[in-house]
Image (cartoon, rainbow, N blue to C red):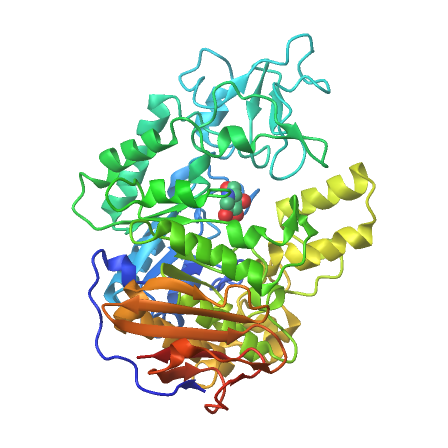
Length: 571
Ligand code: NOJ
């Protein structure tokens, strides 16, 4: 299994460095718990750095560990310059930076500045009244004319929040509403205010000067809003869709250009800036990441992970491999040689890909490795989300009490208690797509609580840790982990994989995902069978190539791809 012929030797040097890099995302709550309180922490990460380093990744992206009431698991920050005690201390973070740097890896922190927590001192002051120092740091509006504040219909506009219900919260002390695109404990900052921008830029500089290597920027395309905040089109939830008015607002490029000027340009490092941008189009993605005129290094876009929802992620629209490969190819073509994309199947907001688009039963190994092969052979920077390198699957949650995620719980409440939908149907949707699938604890061993904690985990471990765990895979050359390690090594050593141009082959083929990469006359051809049956395949592009790798134990028969077989050919 794995490699059929040796990898090109040596480590490439690319300019910029991240063009041949791979990122590993740690969701600290669910990674490893060192102190036994059932919640993962920084010491837990330090204890497991070998697992990450041995994979060969270059960058660790840490989901938020700042002080937070944890309404949205840390994406609601009450102090940007401190670590939440549940995760450890600033000293622990310094130790993590040092330990990563010692091993040649970099640390990217989550930057969540579209909103703060409502327990952030800026907001606690702002809510007190219109004459406070931070009065205008958030998006405050009067009730709709003719309505009394706090009564139904008095919200300044009809926007719904991502986490169900209105996007507005009434504050009687101030006699106004504030905007919260996410939970009511996540008030949106007012980026029109220059004081807000400079406070955020100072804070970013403080982290860079402490030694971190960049930021993954949460919903960063939402920072600029249409100042009119017009009503949106009303959808099935009964709320209006504000997306057209906040997802690519009039000053978004100005804000990010200013950030670059104020924060990154004056510093000597080569930092990584990743823009998480829900709903961004390929054309916008290019404007953000153009190597000459863009403001960020790479975009983290959502097109492919939105294909299987009909209007909302909770309503399933079954998709085919044709939908998926078209979407990825569209981004490859649009970003071309000037822009840069992040390549991912999983993160802390997505269900596990082997369950979503693979076959997590009979062909679990083959489909996990086929999905990995296809993704990692595209052009862009691959992201591995903790546990993906083991082929971790969705959790078969049975009861609403097993869920923890605010988005899932609010959806259940709105769907069942307000819209009157059938609870079993709602639970089935949650089991398929809930973010909690990604947040179940990392599976280290087949022992108690999967080796994640000596206490009681904040969310249940998946019972399949009895056979699916890191200890079982780390030294097994035929494991999913070993396959990921091979793909990461390939990106480091093969200029075709790191830099090659992309061309989709067989765009309409209903079973095969095939494409070619080309760099300075050398080519790689990838062909993967996205079904659980044998498929015949004649691919003239493989003529004159050798088989570099397959996810089966032998080379098989020419012209036939076995279930979920993924082959890499190379000239
Ligand atoms: C995107 C993050 O990935 C998600 O987890 C979070 O809930 C929202 N932004 C709000 O910060």
